[in-house]
Image 1: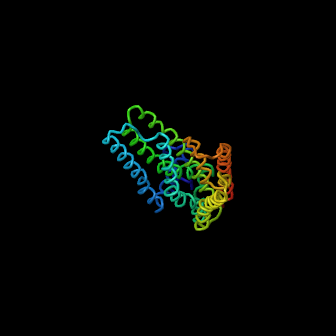
Image 2 (image 1 turned 90 degrees about the vertical axis):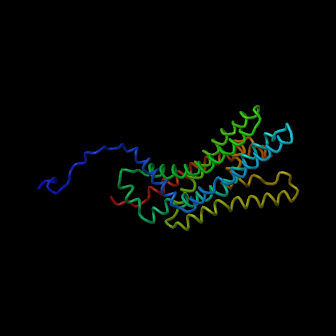
Image 3 (image 1 turned 135 degrees about the horizontal axis):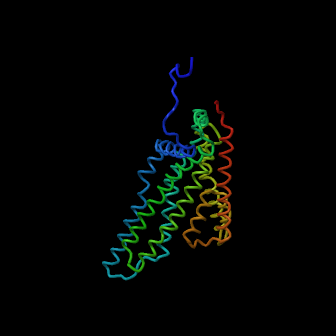
Length: 293
């Protein structure tokens, strides 16, 4: 009896290349991220700070024109306002996305033994990680860049014709910083999710890594300033992921925060090292996943 007599037939359909697995994992990751109620909250409320900023910009500029004031908002304050929007988005909404869709991604698959399905197929750990990181990066990028675009369009629409092009140029640093946030936070949060099978443990670890170093650096900095140091102790912010991203954001937007330039460039170097280390850790943990073929 041949195999055809058993009812099996050869597959005659379209065979997609192995590289298509990454796009499949990306689509799966996007749907999995949307399943988290934390991501839904961030998606629905993420535009609120930008809308408040737009209302303030439009109100202030229209009031100034009605009062026949030729002065416009200081360009430095405009840049600082855009930079402040990113700080708000990162703490209020990006934190929710990374917690709900990043810090539990691999832990959830480990719990449900999903790797026996993924890796038994022609999906490599690199493709799996690229799909997971890419899906989370799309959400982070959208929640940061889209509000920035809306605010910048309001700035351009209400600016004087001489300043409109300059304020439109804010989209370039906004794009760069959104890409940095998406890459760094997606890789680091997913790397944290690979440390354990327990979603509660990995999510707690991400909360600790997100808050505790920043809080510790802030307390020490305040104490140093209260003790008479004009500069405080800003170097301790290098132990904080959010602190590192803050230095990189100031560098990209060219915001004068009174911080030593060496500290900013050290932050860039550390951020690159942390991102590369997160990718290495996640791949190493994925390589240990038990797969039955």
